[in-house]
Amino acid sequence: MQSIYLVGFMGSGKSNVAVALHQKLNKQLLDTDQMIVDTYGLTIPEIFQQKGEEIFREYETSVLKQTPIKEAIIATGGGIIEKAENREWLKENGKVIFLKTSWEEINRRLVDDQSRPIWNNQDRDKQQLLVERTPKYLEVADLIVETDGKDVHSIIEEIADKLG
Ligand code: S3P
Image (tube, rainbow, N blue to C red; front, side):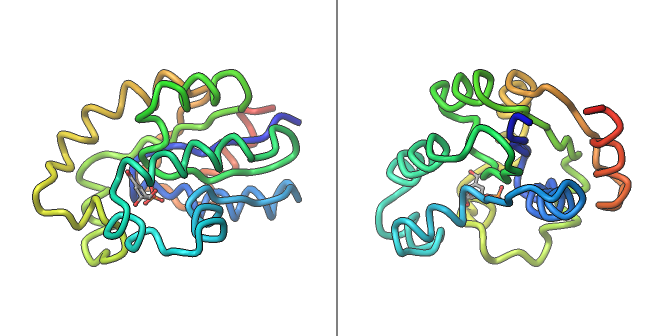
């Protein structure tokens, strides 16, 4: 089996869906943000504060390319599709599932979130970011799953059905 890469905006449910798929399919579970934390010894907010977004993106590309391209379920960070290099790598190597979530639903889910540097940056227009990123998620996606109003269980059933 080709590894499954979950992509989508912050709050689209990538991590929860990855855990549920890992349990259902009994495959290794990885998370690119967690790999960055483990590799570089800093939390994601610390990396943004101390090194900046550009360095974070370099770390992200580096860990992406270290993920196993077979037999794993991999949750990615919401900005993984920003770099063309990452998009090419994902298209070439992964079975990519785009969790598509509306702006309204993302807001509902992340209303109390304090852990995401980009979400909590008041100078960033997050709604515009979602608009800009959406074609990039679509570019890499083998499968698109709308998540609004669905629980994790129905999302993984839909994925399992569509992957066949
Ligand atoms: C980011 C999303 C985060 C994390 C980092 C940057 C982004 O991951 O990689 O804070 O640029 O959208 P989640 O999508 O899991 O929140």
